[in-house]
Length: 307
Image 1 (tube, helix red, strand yellow):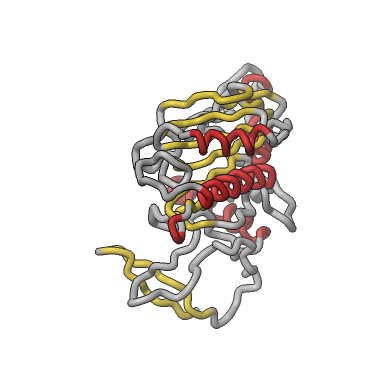
Image 2: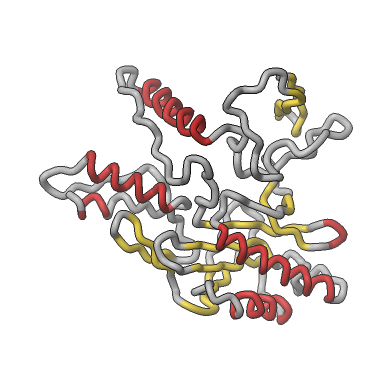
């Protein structure tokens, strides 16, 4: 391939593929229109970064699984040279259609073109919001709800007076994000609006318009997050309607997930992992197996249950 080096900022550079001379048999066309480098740079600056979410959509899924196993083997052997090779990576999605596997749908909001409010993801390595029209890795139920909310919010914004810039209306930066948790094992859907400050009547009307008429949404929450940091949620969360938590099932055990809980994004993959761990590490007396992941991990509970 031919690549060029672009300057991101002082002391930081990135390589951009300009031309592929010989294509790998494992290269595929990315399904997402926002994946990767999105266009030519101007004035020598790398200013057309794509979505910062996915990195491997240009690799065929079976090859992704092989590369993941190879990566685990390499990392283990750096610490333990005599470690056995990793087992083949299991798949929690259809091998020919590995999409819609994220049960946690999350979008951010920011300034859009001509004063509009954009909903999307951050550009890679920045806090700039790229408006998106699709996110194929999200569960489609969560996507549908999020885009209905965006369309309703945009409709109100276009018919509202020019924003005062004080965070008092839908077009101002009061909307920071939207998180939708879609249960894999139950029909429950939990939506959380992430706001920088109190919502005005127009935003409340949009919320009622979308969520009250949406029979699939079982609970709605509001999270206040005025700080401009990298965290998804702020400290204060309030239930607006429905249940306090969403019920999910992993490896035969039921979990209650709060709106801001750090729970596994791919529930089906977690179910496979838990069952593999329980089977391979089953002992004559109960034992606890913990993961090195910050937040809520389902592993410590199923292990004693199957011990």
